[in-house]
Image 1 (cartoon, rainbow over the protein chains, first blue to last red):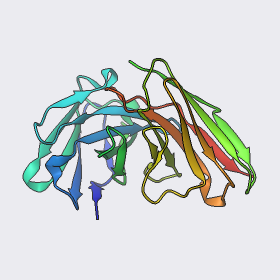
Image 2: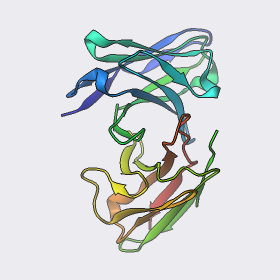
Image 3: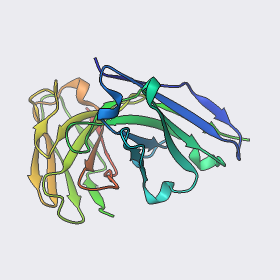
Length: 119
Length: 107
């Protein structure tokens, strides 16, 4: 069965960098893109962007350009989200989700990774 | 970017009732609209894609409708497990914007 398993919770200080992993199983990794979503406490879902797992080309929403970066380790069927120069307002749960067979709708989701930024 | 306006922000309903959540796109997105359910502390779950197609395993009491700029998610005969938050999201060209969400409380 298809699964996306994310790395564990992170506690970071402002200015630090965090990297979240998302390991896929149950399908061929390079046949479906990976999307990333932010859920801040008490707020709604926000689309960060997606990465084409075949070409490695990323696409970011405007609000997430600059400090947010996607990468891949195709041999390990793993996608990464790196956030650099962390700010308090980056405190959120981050989800990876498969760019499924339905034209962009996210059919499988990781369990989420909590990132807390505090001095 | 396409903006998604979702309403209501919250609603409370009893088991057995029918509820409808609406979503409006700022421009024509044809039928590229998905609905998700998220329960507290859990990952979102895909309910509907392409405006009206139920995702695998989703109960038939859920239904999606609409096209162009106006969409709705209807839940017939509410069950206790239907509480949670619901989000629409367009999937017609990036960025794939979400609506602001609807929190459904079961009375």
